[in-house]
Length: 187
Image (cartoon, rainbow, N blue to C red; front, side):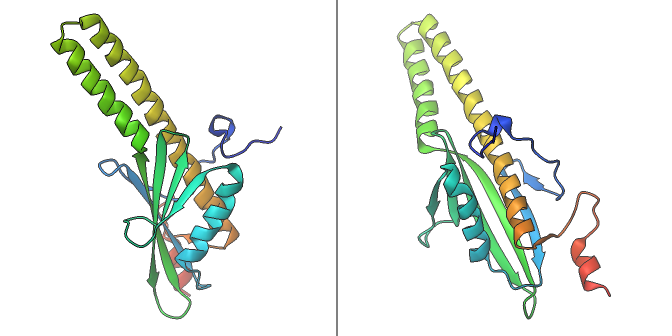
């Protein structure tokens, strides 16, 4: 039986080989890669799209006015906003910095606002049973949304690691805190 990236519960995730900088406040994580081959951000983004599109992920590309390069949706509740920045270090030497921000979809935001409004209306109209039911449903839905966001973040991390290996990008810092760039730059 083969598994796909849309079957997140079946994927055996590798332990992170790359130190992931997580910003809990921004609900995002960052990865950095080094290349001597002159790989540009467009190459990385195209490889990510090539890997995700056959798995039926909906991908929106930035038209130049957003703070992200790709917006990747999984289901109706969650999305990731992917941004890649390139630092040129002379010749073909580059550092690619990738930021993945986990976000709720518009439908998820509207559902959460709807639960809140419905709960307030039920309390104002003196229907505590309806308010309790709405709170329970809202909590259940929020749990599902958080779980799907977490799964999508893990999937995208694995996709980025697969793409990085395919195009020979080196992670700048591994979990052992040994800088790969330092070992590449020092003779």
